[in-house]
Length: 473
Image (tube, rainbow, N blue to C red; front, top):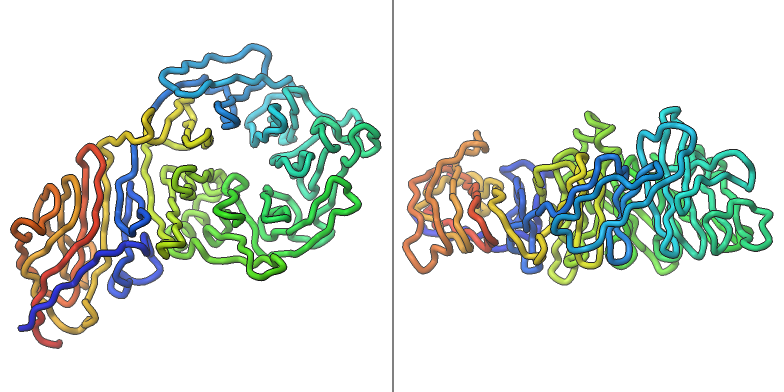
């Protein structure tokens, strides 16, 4: 028998379920929970979500702006806020009664230190507030409607069914196109360009264009303070089902959740024509069943870009799907977090990320020092690897692990049961300077399942399988 070392020392492919556990490539992972891929391609435990404040559940939305958090509710008297150890101020904003019970606040957007808020009432009608005041459309008595807002080029834009509506220049409260003081208000019927443009979901700036999303279509528009200069640039046959999954990412790209999974708009040519890339294809097999079977939960997905490392976080139900993207290291890697609570809203304030749950608890990622860890369990599972010889039986003599902190190491060598693992050892730190982990295994493929439930930071850098080849089947 000849000896061989099968090394897994680069995890830059991250979580990838596109292929079978028996054919997935070295460097990909079947499970990567409560960890991320760092800039060097290693597995690094996530930090803790630390509760820092509590607000009354009657606040329907939390938003990060400037150096603080802002919370919103309908009424005249601010609801209770327990600031706890929150390192930034929490400012309440009360919204005028629109004449019916508001069941949900759907979006908040800032403009010159004031806020436009959209919400939906018990009747199903939507409502719009600016600086706490209910807005009317076109200078008339009819109430304004909308579900999503975006500040752009001195105006406030909002989606309203099949219409993209926009304010006058310099004042979001001006909705009258005839205004001589703040001209430029009006609307665009997006459905006349393509019938799939009905029922707009949201929008985001894409380089010098505005990407306006419906469920099955995205329209790229050149928008100007003067509506006469508004021009349709391109139609893309893909859209989003989750307005708050739309996030500007990196140096101009836009990520969003479509019916097929997480997708991106990307500059593909010098004239900024856009096409759809498959940045999320590695986790399509995870997200697609969820989108089909739990459409309401998928539509409520919430995304944020974590400021320090620029990672895209997408929360759905009880899981955060995390994209680590470091082009210089050729790293495009997904992982998952299980925070232990549901996220109603994210709020990024300076270099901090806050989350609010449905009961009003506010959490800060990394805690007050932005480097706090807890005993959250990290789970890592490799595919079953064949070392380039899938029909040759191999004997595993031992395993070495390069890591920090305490890990349990389980090994599996039965290709007909890729869920079966046997505990090989519990280790505390790297094994290279001490005895290797002995293991008496035999099979054509080998995999490892590792867990770290100890407090504090942890890194998994490499796994080395010391093999002896047997005979070809």
